[in-house]
Length: 145
Image (cartoon, rainbow, N blue to C red; front, top):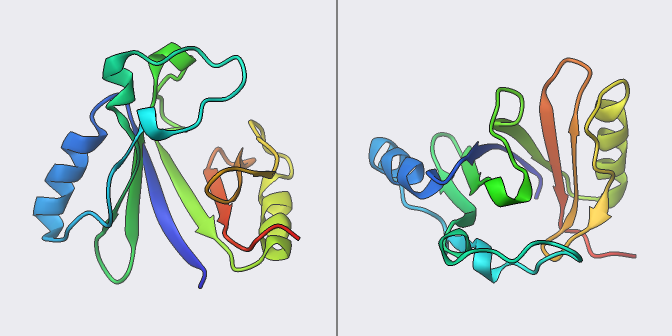
């Protein structure tokens, strides 16, 4: 079932922020918090420090009316820099790859910083900054053809 959520990026304070949001909205984090040390590393990626391995790779918190906040810690060692434009992302989870590709192409047109759509361990994924400076993330859980 498709959904829309908001993805928040932090520089090492995701768990603290989501703890606060959990108390404010009186809801509980969904499932386990995924840690950076649990994620597969890409080819040529630098080795994570012990502190970075404990940082948040992914967390989800339902807030109001079925809306979900998601979050992650950005890693300075990976060249990540938190700034307006990459601190908040609208995350779309269409039901099909075809709809995901259509939305990705339309929202990426005239934009920048596009990753392209690619199969990741968790889903068919991509990210793009549209021509108005809004960041969009796409996750589709339909299996690869």
